[in-house]
Length: 297
Image (cartoon, rainbow, N blue to C red; front, side):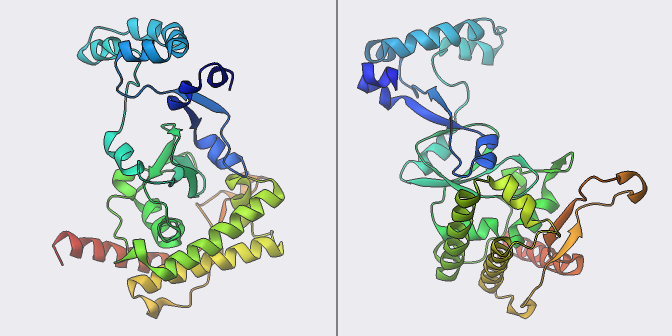
């Protein structure tokens, strides 16, 4: 704020910066950091328009860049020391016309998708999806996508490690999912209720979903969240044309086997999800659909 007050033009290149911890821990996914992002502008232009910001980057970034080894990549980073070392032009282009994007923490105990403003710089710890509709939120947050992601993702300790190339790019979304009115309605109802609940309880996504998956949690507000999640699941299954599977009920199932004798008083790793036979049937249908589409069917 001080820099922008002194030179309003700084607003063009100072961006909020957010990572997985803020996304999962703050009820409103609020950031507390900023970054200077000059894009692909030249050194001369940056010095002319934002000398105070270039002084900061020159002091804090340039020494580290100049200390890099003289590999091809190191030389490139030294030559453009005031610019980001790694950018994602395709993603940036997809985000450009949007007001918000969907995001989730790359490594997390829970697959929890949320909206973030589009004008931010996102840490590597986040996975960003260039969609701004509740229909897209519904398709990504509902259990069919989670079943797929947990099957194909790697894990870090007991946490899901979401890799877009394995979990998103291969996922066979239902036909017309981006404009499906039923997905839009179910996603909006769930998202708005969840956001209100987090604000009311001053809880982030991790704390909320810990309660969501706790078999001892019978708070009516959490019970309602589970019901709305089931409504999203049903909307997605109907979008696939898999009405024969409905209605479906969830249960509290251990995420992995534990040794009861040595587990002690620690909280058991329950997850409120579909029973294994249901999960396996849906995964089999998704795999079959993916294979059929790969063959052009």
